[in-house]
Image (cartoon, rainbow, N blue to C red; front, side, top):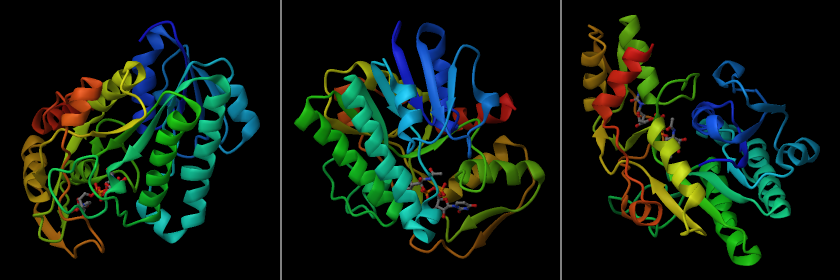
Amino acid sequence: LRDRTILVTGGAGFIGSHLVGALTPHNEVRILDSFETGDRAHLPDGVTVIEGDIGDPIALQRAARGVDLIFHHAALVSVSQSVDAPRRSNQTNLEASLLVLEQARQEDARVVVASSAAVYGHPEELPITESAPTNPTSPYGVQKLALDQYTRLYEELYDLPTVALRYFNVYGPRQQGPYSGVISTFLEQARAGEPITIEGDGRQSRDFIHVADVVRANLQAATTDATGEAYNIGTGHRTTIEELAETIRDAAESSSPIVHREPRAGDIRHSGADTSKANQGLGFDARIGLEAGIQSLIEDD
Ligand code: UD2
């Protein structure tokens, strides 16, 4: 991608900042971020930073003026917070996201939105295809599903090129904080020599995809002709939490014990992407295997 004028919402966040890093050398990049969880230290030189909320129309208009492409990554990402306060997360994840779509319509800009495997809820079949039933188990999932559907509708109703990317379990550098995901939690525990805490029997499984692969999927989504669609972004491989705990302990050369706790209420048992639609529509395949991804996480620090 070159010589484009691009807005990344949530550009200082985990996935957003990696994307900004890939875009900046060859494009004019702006970010709109509230910095509630984003971090300026993750932004390369040459990026125009607009500090503000996507729900603030003035800030959004300023950020989006003249852009031809928007990557929408701003969100309240905590599933559990969405359960505690559904209206607050709805405000950002759905209402303000609609403002972003409206702004894209105004600018006639392509939009790539961050959707989620959370739209599927408990899957009936594995691997999960994009046409599988959608029964989210959290307000977060309902909000992402509605956004995902709006994204498709904006293409149908207004002829705006749009793509929704349904991320599976994304991991990588800069993923921190209490809602950061099992890989960063286990790695912190392993490094500190503290017990690695498996919730439940550890036989539940996930499709873990490295953030560098997610960035590549975004770049493909920016140029594909197969718009108006939602794509699973995963690797197609599932790993159990038990295997993950051992892999991380070994890679970190840690002597942490692996312990079991109560299972998480409402936990999804298995999740794994059918990746054929993304392969066909985006020409996308994940390249970074879990062991290599974890190894690079350890070496980078
Ligand atoms: C992921 C996404 C979430 C949403 C959801 C949709 C992340 C960080 N979250 O939630 O945004 O899209 O998928 O289904 O990617 N676990 C432990 N010990 C720990 C922490 C976690 O055993 O200390 C287990 C946990 O019970 C679960 C698995 O690891 O079975 C993954 O947990 P997670 O919070 O990383 O991600 P998940 O799949 O709940």
